[in-house]
Length: 103
Image 1 (cartoon, rainbow, N blue to C red):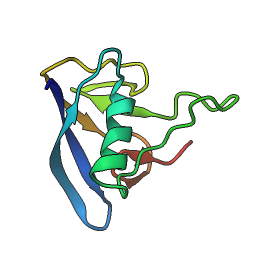
Image 2 (cartoon, helix red, strand yellow):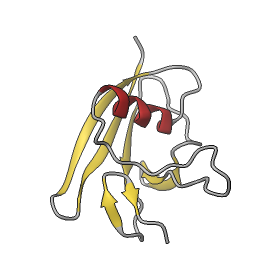
Image 3 (tube, helix red, strand yellow):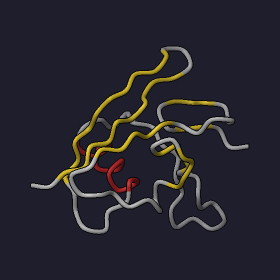
Image 4 (cartoon, rainbow, N blue to C red):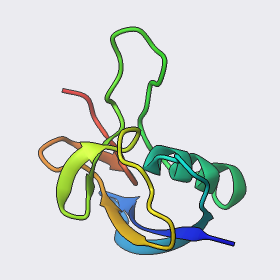
């Protein structure tokens, strides 16, 4: 079975951060947001990420730092048998895990 490994910065301002690896089953065409949803559904329902897919005028809330560059988790495709580091956006108040406050 093919996988993608997400190394995700988890935590909050009170507890600090920890880098947690998650091995996610890969499927053709999946985005990194799809992989995060898989983690929430199968590994840890407490995983926090902001998104508003299919909501009017609320798109692009899934911003994060992916391998050192800002991007949208819904737009970045997962690569089979690869590793990626995902961190919360900087420059916004940090809430928890990948969730940051809207400006």
